Length: 257
Image (cartoon, rainbow, N blue to C red):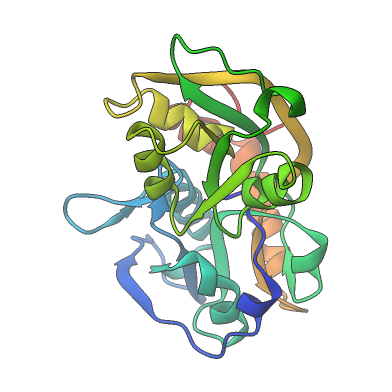
């Protein structure tokens, strides 16, 4: 979720624009922490009709800030520039369903994982889709660019299927719904949310989950002591039931595995 991987060219970008500012309500002011999320990855992070950031990641961020008694501000940042923005000190942490990968660990540190992601194919209901390499051969399969799903498609199936990558998950859903894709490969939990929406009613998961041991963490700058504070707060909100309450707002099953 966004269980994602960022291309090294993106990591070296010099500047990013942070938009859609939302201030978290904290009962007691303390450390000032700026947190980035994407705002285009429902139900984990999205912008509501009032222009406010919402979603699982945002709720987790607010719970962590409350536990740390920190004065937090949450901002939206396009995915491709989100790590460069952290390194350029535009913000102090990224809570945006980011996968912990070896590539990213070379340039940022991560908290302990706060959920576990798997990949899944989605396709039209009533239409057989064999998700084996032989079954997918020659089909057009989409994914969001610079994500674990996109990388998996290119690395594992790039010589089998026609890969189409999109700047946002929403645009990938649109092309699947319009028939321009035979299938979509996605992080399972946001796809679950879309399949239960009006737009996704004609589609369903196909085949088995792809478990690639994808752990989702909070990114911070190398050596930042904020990592330890976040880990302690995360452990506390899991133990006191706050995390389970947030989880239940979005899924009828636990994603903290």
